[in-house]
Structures are given as C-alpha cells and as structure tokens.
Length: 512
Image 1 (tube, rainbow, N blue to C red):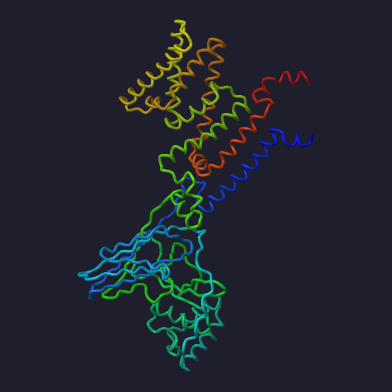
Image 2 (cartoon, rainbow, N blue to C red):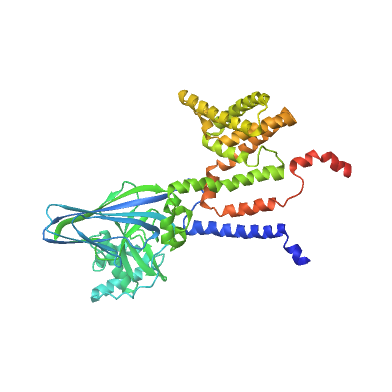
C-alpha cells in the first residue's frame, strides 16, 4: 500500500519534473562553459584581425621567408588563419609556430600577408605549464662573474620575486659604467630582454623573449612589444621589462614566444614586417562551433540544432517559444480560471501580434471581429446549415483580409495591412463562436469571452515578445522539457480555480 502511494500519478510527475530540472540545469551549464552561450541576446564577442605585412627586395633566385606566428595564448583562441603569398610554396610548421614561404625568380618588391583572426576567451588557458629544461649557466669571464654577483646582491634588496628584483636592478643600474659588462649598452628592448635572460640563467631560471601586440583598432606598428617570460614557482610568468609587472595586460596578445627573430628572409634585403589590427564582433551562437572545438566538445555540438541552416533555425526559434506560450495559457485557464474562445486561440493571436506589432494588431483584429460579427448576424436570418455558414464566414474573412491589405498598401499604413498575419480559420472560428454565444448566452457573456481571449493573448504576447525570453528558450531549449512536466503536473490539479473561489465564496461561508 505504501509503495502504491509512492508511485501515484502526481508523485511520478513530480519526480520527472525534478529530473528534468536537473537535466536542464546541466545542459545550461554545459552550453555556457563549453559553447560560450549567454543568457543575454545582446552580448557579443570581440573578434580581432591581426595582419602581418611582410615586405622585402629580392636579391637571389631562391627566396625563403620564415615568419613566427602565434601558438598557445592566454585568454585568446585562434578563429582562423589566412596566408596571401601568390607564387610561393607555403608550409605551416605547427611545432615551431612558423610559416615558411618559399619562392623562385622573384623580381621587384615583394609583399606577403599573414592574417590571423582571434577571439577573446577568458576561460581559455592553454599555455603549456610543463617545466622546461634547466638553463645552462652562461660562460663568463672573471670580471663578468664579479658584476653578476653584484647584481644578484643588489637584487636581494628589491621587492617582488626573483625576476622582478632583477628587472628593478637592471633598470636602476643600466647607466652604471661599472656594470657595463653585464648590463645592456644600447638600451633597446630586445637587448634588455636578452641581458635579463642571461642574468636569470646564472641562477638557472629559464626565461625567453615574448613579443606582444596590443589589440587596439586601427593600430599599426612595425615592432611588437618585447616582454620577458620566465619559469618560476612552477609556472611560466610574463613580465614587463620596464615595470616588472606580472601578467599580460588586457587586450594584449602574445604573437611569438622564444625564437631568435620574428622574421627571417633569405634571398632578400630591406625586409620588414608591419602589423595592423582591426576589430569586429560576433554573437556567442556564431562563435559556439569554435568554442566547442577549442574545448574538444565539437562532437556534441555537431548534433545540435545550432548547426542547421539559418532558415531552419529561424523556424525552430518560433517552435521553441510555443511551450512557454502554452504554459501561460494553461496557468490562466486551469489555475486562474479565465474562460476563452478555444484553448489555444489566445496563443495563436499572441503569435500574430508579434508579427503585426501590438497596437496595430489589436486594432486590426478588433475591426475584423466587429465586421465579421455584423455580417454573421445578417446571414443568421437566412437559416443556413452549419458547414455552409462557417464556410461563408471563412470566405468573408479572406475577402476582408484582402481588402484591408490593399487599403493599407494604398494608404501606406501598416495598421490595416496587419490583417494578413492573423490566422484565417481561427478568426472565422472566433466570429462563429461569438455569434453562437451571443444567441445562446447573450451579449454580456459574448463580450466577456472575447475580452478574456484578448486579455490572455496580450499576457502571452508580452511573455513571448521579450527578446531575452525568446533567446533563452532557443539557446537553452532543455527548458521545454521542464515546461512539459509542469503542464502535466498542472493537469492533476482538481481544486478550485482563483475565479471560482470568489464565485463560490457564499457557499463556502454557508457550509462553515
């Protein structure tokens, strides 16, 4: 007996509702984490295009251009790469993060392009954290060793970690002639970074040069900024060689790590590379496939509705909102007790109002119902049979829609032209139902039912016309399963509706 009570219809539906909520919550979490979905339809992702323009003058029959390109990057993923090098054989060395372009018998000035599209992904942290091989100590003369020890002694007096201490000392003592054997002479960013690497290697701290580009729209530069990357405290950390600050500033991307040079041209002279940056935006749904691929979840994404053509997706957007509209109608009818003309007539009217616009749709619908009822009252005197009578009403509605559409076009008004978006059969059925109710129950009940139908349609309209609601129901369509079990659970409710509590209040008091 207890087992039977445990598996009543209401309790089974309650269990299924809880399971559907858990499933929907996991689905939403999965899409946000791995596909980059958002609850806001207005959120966009910045997509940056970095153009590297390589130019040089050929001086040999054989030309070999080696350009270092980005590999692993914090907070950014690669969206796509494009190489424009007509007449060159192009090889991408993914292992060493290089693009190799080879050509023969070139004349005049050569211009080659490497284009990179990246997008920001703060959840991405693909930087290799594995420990590098121990750095070899540099070979130093006796005088150089003395200066090196002095630098490290001065570093102990500075704040920060070992790398930050060294950077502070180098910047402070750079003009000191007594340190000229160890510290940089030219004071160029590259030479400073190379000297820092040498100083850190003395303490067997691995370090390398990193070249970074600021993502600023319209920015053009010949040289990326030089940064220092050192392996300390069991991780690679990026340092500003001027201030010693740790980490990559926001809107910066690492274009090259390590390596001797950014660009190496053999068989050419006067070579240089010019960088330019442009920005565009894309919605999270357009970026979902790339995010899924970056997170190794592309297989799951390929079997989702978001891979369908846009035409099918736009159709499904409307279908995904239907369950929520149905839930609104069920709540108003079964819980509140609002009587309408037809079960889902208000929902269809609400869908039509979304197409027509709220006020134009309401006015146009009111005109159609008024004229339809007037014509139906005239036909009632002919005592026609049911099917021919309804058929007449349908044909009249079609002609009325045609007339209103033509008038709206001639008057350049969308108000009367909105009639074309209303369901013909539903409109005719409302007119017929209203006429019968008028004859059987009087004008008051008829007007009340029409008002309730419009009220339910208006409430449903404001729910489904909200951009956030429509986006969420399409992006996180698992919620429709939750709605399905809520509707089924509401179907087991047999108590008083809210309007019935007021209606039978006197009987309840009498019984008490």
